Amino acid sequence: MAPKVLISDKISPAAVQIFKDRGVDVTYEPDLGKDKEKLAAVIGQYDGLAIRSATKATDKIIAAATNLKVIGRAGIGVDNVDIPAATAKGIIVMNTPFGNSITTAEHAIAMMFALARELPAADASTQAGKWEKNRFMGVEITAKTLGVIGCGNIGSIVAERGIGLKMKVIAFDPFLSPERAREMGVEKVELDELLARADFITLHTPLTDKTKNILSAESLAKTKKGVRIINCARGGLVDEVALRAALDSGHVAGAAFDVFVTEPATENVLFGHPNVIATPHLGASTNEAQENVALQVAEQMADYLVRGAITNAINFPSISAEEAPRLKPFVELAEKLGSFAGQLTETGLKGIRIEYEGAVADMNTRALTSAAVAGVLRPMLSDVNMVSAPAVARERGIAIEEVRREASANYESAIKLVIQTEKQSRSVTGTVFADGKPRIIEIKGISIDAEFGASMLYVTNTDQPGYIGALGSTLGQAGVNIATFNLGRTSPGGDAIAIVQVDGPIANDVVEKVKALPQVKQAKALTF
Ligand SMILES: NC(=O)c1ccc[n+]([C@@H]2O[C@H](COP(=O)([O-])OP(=O)(O)OC[C@H]3O[C@@H](n4cnc5c(N)ncnc54)[C@H](O)[C@@H]3O)[C@@H](O)[C@H]2O)c1
Ligand SMILES: O=C(O)[C@H](O)COP(=O)(O)O
Image (tube, rainbow, N blue to C red; front, top):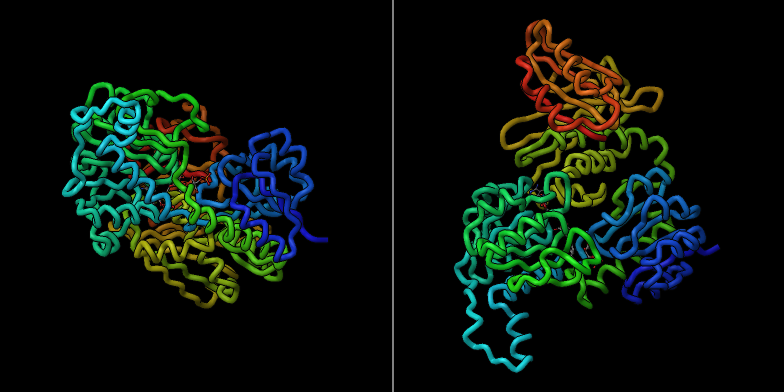
């Protein structure tokens, strides 16, 4: 029987023909996604769901999706898909990571011009018959400083366009390598410097724990008086209430927003301010971009449903059906080792080396390397997937190296990940036990034996009496329940590591208390 796909969002109808040509039955209901109840009632009939951002593939929809095998996002952001719920159900989630980048960058540039010359207000006034020639005094863009926060696919296109407009472009992006910045003609700076120097600030990061309110009241106060701010990335990157206050005080001269904390944004604290320009999440809305993403998503979904081929999957590597069962636990191990190292990485990444020892060295190490690299990059990049991860790393000048060797005396298979940053090198090794569970067996040359848990505390310290008790008491007093506690050290009195698996998330103030213990050098809460 032909697989069935539902298109529940305003995807270009060009996708319909692609599905049909590849033997997929397709239902085109572009408004259905907005009706949660109706979607939940029909989703059980379909093998594939093709969406943009208006359809929310929540855990409830996924629970009702008894036959669903793939969700295809015609666009970039998959924040409208509950990926853990989809993964738990074995549903592949794929996106089209580059198809609308140019169009979105162009929208940001259009917003910059609109702000500089107050085009929407001037248009409204002129068409109202007022001819207010003296009211609208703009600013020139040439020679102004454009501050790009997040210099990935879209940010780097905006930077390139800014340079073409004779602007000085500065960028804050911890994952932008100095070499890549130089190649682009962009000056890599820290956030505070960008805030102090930029005449225009444009945001192009995903919304993560680290980027949420990256423009907070505090950071807005560090901006240049008269700064203009553009957000065509995600609502929540800027504190809307704080921005409104900064606009009201005249410190911020203008703001152009395509995305909002709550969407659809039928009301918002920014609305009504004379120096605010708003568009309804139109960043990706051009004929060209919509054609690109529609064709691409239909091809990818049909290839998966008809032939089992996986491309641009967020939650699964590109591997064949035969090798999948043997590879699966090692994919999980590689990704978790990557995530472990990625969460501990705070400065620019220069290289990732993955060393395969023993039986695992004869497996599909390309998929494993992709999984490891995706794990490293995912804490920093929006929706990087196992297929795109090596290319994304290459683009950012991060060297990827694979080494294969014989088994060590202790383990039949082991994967060692070595991360080189601008400041240091860090290694972590893991293996898969007979129960199929991945485990950490070495960190920075120190032997340890720890399982991965959903919530973990990683602590490095000097090996001194009293420390373990103090750490346990600190966690206990904060109401944190310890599930497992694993220790390793170089030598008595030397460098030591503790990996503590706990029940539930670890609050920042608890991590700060651990950091304050006299023996502790570093403490970090990790999630898997
Ligand atoms: N308005 C729209 O319609 C529209 C269209 C397409 C994409 N988007 C959004 O635009 C954003 C960027 O998309 P992209 O394709 O360029 O993503 P990308 O992954 O290629 O780039 C994101 C960049 O942000 C950087 N970054 C991550 N954390 C950071 C931090 N804490 N500080 C500074 N930089 C950080 C990363 O290093 C990366 O270079 C995403 O949120 C995406 O969903 C919006
Ligand atoms: O992440 C994206 O691709 C953009 O936000 C575009 O979303 P849209 O397809 O709903 O316009």
